[in-house]
Image (cartoon, rainbow, N blue to C red):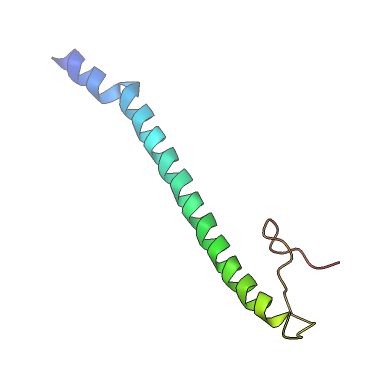
Length: 74
């Protein structure tokens, strides 16, 4: 009985499961954050797309790359 309780308490199975669950939650959280950032970036890009044909030649902080939002035009 004591041996069973010890193995139940200190078996690596629970730790492995907790680590796997935590890692999965972290991956999901990062994907949600990346999706939210991309959504915000696309909203800014949409507004800039309307301004450019309207003749606005100098758009501050213009989006030139979705992969690198901090990139500036050459």
